[in-house]
Image 1 (spheres, helix red, strand yellow):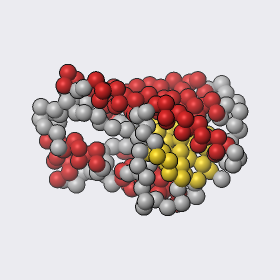
Image 2 (cartoon, rainbow, N blue to C red):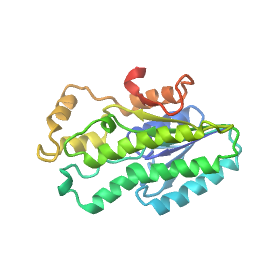
Image 3 (cartoon, rainbow, N blue to C red):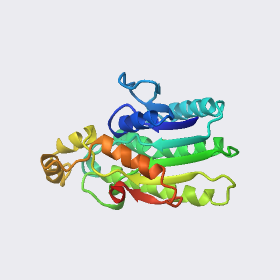
Length: 243
C-alpha cells in the first residue's frame, strides 16, 4: 500500500492531485477546510490549515494511522496556500498577514518537521513535495506576503534535503512551481485593482488568450515530477520543464 497526504485537496490543483493519486492506487488522505462530496474513496479530514495547533494534531493522528498499515511508501504534498489580501503592505491587516504566513509557510514547515520525526526509523520510500510558485523568485507589487512565504518554502526545502543527506533512509524533498493554473486563485487575482496589484492586466489577458493550464494538466506534471528518480534531493523544479 502506498499512502499520500495532500493538503488543500478539496478544490483546484489539490482536488486534481487527490483524484489522480487515488486513480493510481494510492491511499489518499486529503486535509482541507472543506469536504468535497465529489471525491470518492478518499479519506477527507476537515481542518483549518492556518490554525497551526489544530493542524499539528490532525497530521499526527493521520501519520499514526498510516504507519499502523505498514505502507511501502508515504508521501506528503504541501499544496494548500493562499494569496492573502493583495495590496501594498501597509494596506494589509496584520491578521491577514498572520493567517497567510501560517497557511503558506508555518504549517507546511511544521508538517515537514512532524513527517521527518515520525518517519525517522521508517525504511520505506518517503517523499515530500512542496507546491511553491515562481513568485518565490520575483518581487510583484501587491504580493509581498505571498512572494516571501513561497521563497521561504523553497529555502526550507533545500535545508531539509541537506539535513537528510546522512540518514540511512533519507526523505526525498522537492519544491515544485506549478505555473499559472485556471483556479479560484486566478479568478481572485483578476478581480484586483491596478492599485492593489499592478500586474492585473497581464493575468486578465492570459485568461482571454487561454494561456492558463487546467488543474488536471498540472496534476499530471506534478505526478511525473514526483516519480522522476533522476531529480536530485532538494531541487526546485518547474512543471514547464516537464511538458
